[in-house]
Length: 492
Image: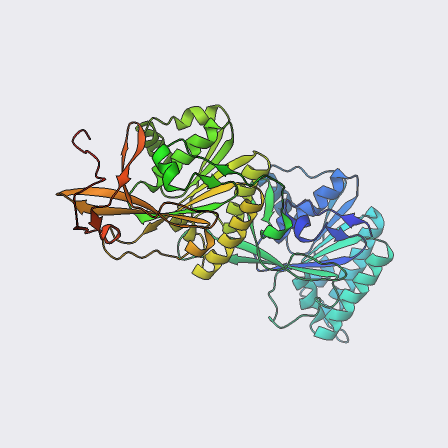
């Protein structure tokens, strides 16, 4: 059967190709969830394909619809006609007496007749009926309401029209009258977090004869219309690539990592605030650019201007890499961004820009965009699996609570990562120092040593293995021999 595109970016992917032509569909949601915007895009997509559209409005005036369209920069195509279905003046006359028939009986019949007349006049391929709540009120009973919807469905089906009916859910929550009649049901929802902008999501409740993508999918309403972000399913995205081990130019760090990191691996960098997690990821970005590869970095916690300045202090010019087209850096506001939109941005960088190294700094900021910790784990699992199957090497940073001693992570994702790099503060000889170690690497051997490191103009400098101490990872080590491996800090 021929598919009918919705005109909403991302929605056709969820619907496995769009809508079957000649069928009736229900889009439901509370007021303000974006039903009118979605329906307008549906009709404008038809107009772009030289299909005639008819918007039948019972709840908004034509002037209100055109004003809403203008806010998106739209000018309705002549093939897209708006029919404002206002009650006839005779039925609004308070002096008119009804002795045998209720006014609702007359209004329902008159409303249906005028809908059919408008359809016969325009002969559209696509129809939007906004909204069903008015018809439900006129019908007054569930039986009459169902019969009225069935009559509309058979009439439109006989004329091969694809119909989108909108429902604002102002009736009883258990009223599923139209659900059984519609060929597919799409529900729009708006969530209000404690802090930040509202979040919107949609779910396909049913779709006869088609295997759609289930679950919730985030969407936004921007200037220009609705954009939907299909839930990421990593199994659908596979690419062939060579799983080679990629060395790091820093010799000591390369030795610590056992010769480098495999392409397509996910790497977690753990440590308290200030240990240099973000700057360590810049080392891997620098290495990727030197290999003539593209990289992408998503920054949640730090202002980009400050990050660029700090990178210059390590001899890394991020702006030059951005200008050369080798690096994309995006500042992410967790209070304004949905997880689905973030996944879409990552996908765009990998699939369209060709990024082979992806940095997410940090997971703490990303967690703020997630309503529940469990959702974060599942979401990160899909995202990391997707990046793995695309051959992109991923670096995640997680800030642990505390500075020394026992520290905890806000969420445990160590089992998701292929490699875990641990950064620590420790005190030795009256100075606060930093230590680095690799505690996990799935894909091969690595050093089991602990090395001190410093951050300076030449980047990250690693010392020899700390063999004269024990308890470094606890933050207060004991000296059990000569302090071998400590770096000379007299020049820093």
